[in-house]
Amino acid sequence: MRQKFPTRRKPKFLQVRVPVSSRQMLISAIGIWAGFFGIWILATSLHWVNPLLVPAPGDVLSATVRLFASGFGSDVLISMMRVLVSFTLACLVAIPLGVAMGAFPAVDAIFAPFVSAWRYLPAPSFIPILLMWFGTGEAPKLALLFLGVIFFLITLIADHTKEIRKELIETALTLGAGRWATVFGVMLPAVAPNILTAMRQMLAVVWTYLVIAEIVASTTGIGAMMMRARRFLHTDEILSGIIVIGVLGLIFDKAFAILHRRLFPYLQEVR
Amino acid sequence: MSQPLLQINNVSKTFALSKGQSLTAVDNVSFAVEKGSICVLLGPSGSGKSTILRMIAGLETQSSGTIALKGAEIDGPARERGMVFQAYTSFDWMSVGKNVEFGMKVNGVPVKERRERAAHFIGLVGLSKFIDTYPSQLSGGMRQRVAIARTLANAPEVLLMDEPFGALDAETRWQMQELMIEVAEASGTTMIIVTHDIEEAIFLADKIVFLSSHPGRIKEDIIPDFKPAERLRSKEELLECPGYIDIERKIMRMMREEGQHG
Image (cartoon, rainbow over all chains, first blue to last red; front, side, top):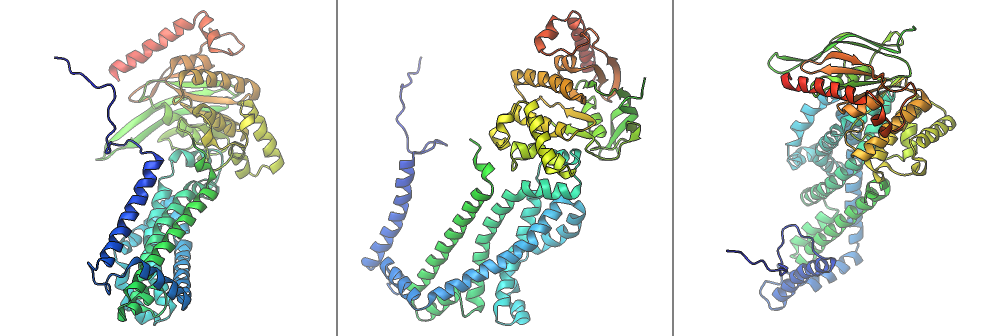
């Protein structure tokens, strides 16, 4: 018996790996957020939830405006400075060390056993001792953020450097490049896009540790504001803080994406 | 006759495997390469031909024997023995021009001179229009041209090529083979080319070193003297040479014999 196949199949919603149109992407994206805010607004206006615990979206918005009017901007600035300073310090250590570990097995033999052990220690476990060593100023916060990412950053950069194709390095050597010309002229530029991607991933982790540091041991910054708000049951302000952190994270991420395009134009031009 | 440019004497290479075992990849190989000639290392897989080339490049160290360039024993990789690989090795972050300048730059050639030399060799491989293009925008064949220009511009004593056209489609491969003859004629560069393509070997070679497999040993030196004194410029000319079929048949038979007990 012969099976009769329809000449045209009706498109199904769920299709394995069939790309969707940009229109469908837009509608889907708006839809999920509309659903989220819709449920939120519904839940608050119909009093399904305690307004003290779950304020309405409008209240959160007005709380955000109120916060910025009364000096929240300086908290945001302090938090950003903490992230940028500690992350810059971490990169200044991790990039040269990671590349050196990836390029020279002798350096890797020294640092790899050390770094991989530290990677498994949760950075927040150092908070008590950091407070005892550095007191309550900026130093313990910066130290926590630094400790939180440095070992991951080193490992990622070292691994990416080790993944550079052997032929690229051998080409440089047979062109007469010495080891320094090979490292700085070929290996570093070859791994640079991956370093920037690793930085982009790790910056998100710094934000996580920032909030931990500010909630546990700070009187300034976004996290400290949120803890203050908790004391007075200002849930709208806590949610403002979360949203501000989210927006800042998005901005930093976007900045990295733009930087990546600017610094490595040759990666975009593959068509 | 003066001494050959490159002299390989009784070279062997043994790789250590796990559990105290070892593998002899190259066994007591000797041959010489004359200045300005094209020498092709031909053999089935497992004949150690790439290993021999890598030892000449200084990327591997022989277990015994000597490799001497102009009478001086080689020591590690150096500019005088430039290598072109089968895999693409373009430096993607540099334009074609900067790629070709790289070797000269690390060797301290002044800017003006290296610009001129780069432009000359990019022209020789037919890529003048693409001097400011990134390699990622080029086809596979064009990228190999960049690699060849980059190595030639660095003025090596000998150009080493490890199956350089293996990843290219047939038509591009013929073009590249013809280009290599053109380059050899124009620059007088000595070349050692590793391949397993019999036709390619016969077309390019002034001398074919045929290697047997497991372990790699020289079975025979084949001089394709059926070709006219002037090098052939196109693959079609090769087909018209009397004697070509005989050589091809002979090498095919040698390959098959290797395959049977290999």
